[in-house]
Length: 560
Image (cartoon, rainbow, N blue to C red; front, side, top):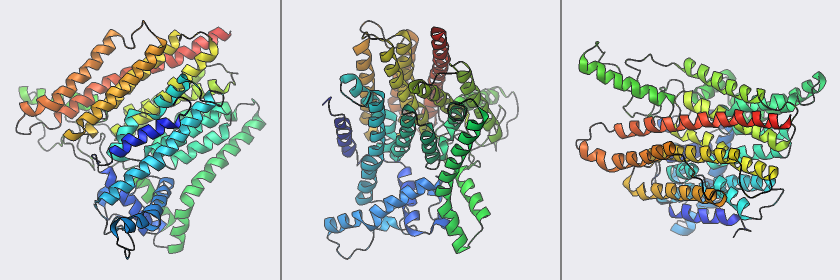
């Protein structure tokens, strides 16, 4: 089995197939509707369609083309044949769920099976290929021992990705597969192709702008300024610029051509409509379930202060002020009552300051002439993690699912650090630095994964999410114990915090409904989870940054 890493994919696929009938979220209808939009309408109408008001297309064009590819499979080629054979409806011409008007909120086992299988055998396959090729490249073109095999397990079997894609339902695997291909080309010292892959990724999902500051600084310093003279800088800058422009032109071009041909609206109107879909700032500061970030803490403090002020009648509070804990999805959910309200401009400013600032600090502390490909990738990954943390912590209307943009790059970083240290020492014990990286990765991954538990709120998913977490912790402990026989993975403070997660899970699963029998305060368990896990993720962010700057500094000192 060790000699065949594809067994990891096959074993995971087996369990994912067993979970096909499990709960799925409203994202299931979102992706069905996107498939129907791209199947039924001309390109220039894709971003205008409102047949399903809560499922309008709000991803960039390349993802829309991916949905169109799925519509070819599901509506016009493979799946209709399967349905005809299985139902004996030989005169059927198309499936109901492929129609943008008639298919709204359509549910059937055929649709469930099709969408689940496309996640497993298209999206997950792309992600696995990215994992396999990346690990193979790090290990000199081979995966031949237990260490390499465990690296594949750690990267591919991300519990958060499993929960979001294979139960909750999304297609994140293809996105992180593209990101891994970008990292792969850096390890091959082909920075231009890596930049092009990232541009492609942005045109699949624009929220990867979270890590754009890291890529901008990396490509500027390690690609454009690599030769150290103005002529080569200009050549490389122009080459990179035209490559990125070509990707965006290939992405948006067909839609603009369709707009020009049909003349239903202008190019300017099309651009405005697309931007309004991609960046819906009319929504509230936080999502219905608060992502565990700075704003979750801010919202909780505002709620506590409001209760105190009302109880002691310290000031008059407008009864018409909307609550931030209503759990509503959609437009702006309300404003803060006591604390100052936060605007999109404030969040954008904070994101920019922290992401660019932390990335620049990391780069200022690195070796200026270090052209080792793995060190380049390490510098990018540390910046990617810091940039992702910054946008996750301070972004506007951040979804809890966005924690994947932190957790998966952290996994890649943990794998890379292991590989670097193996090159630096021959003995079979890891160094202090490597232990600390694995510790912060493990702690943050456990907390981040638990923060996704509210997505699976039905009782029938309890054992599933508990089992996923238990197996992941067992994997972490197994990897740790292979290298460290006497040391603990977590210190006493971290253990106490993690045991607190168990207490919260017991409360929100069993105790809350007993105390509040009249369905009072339904949002309280979610608020507690979001508030508590916010501190754990912030702790992981701070430790990760300290390790990032500490490592570059120690490396520099050693070299000197």
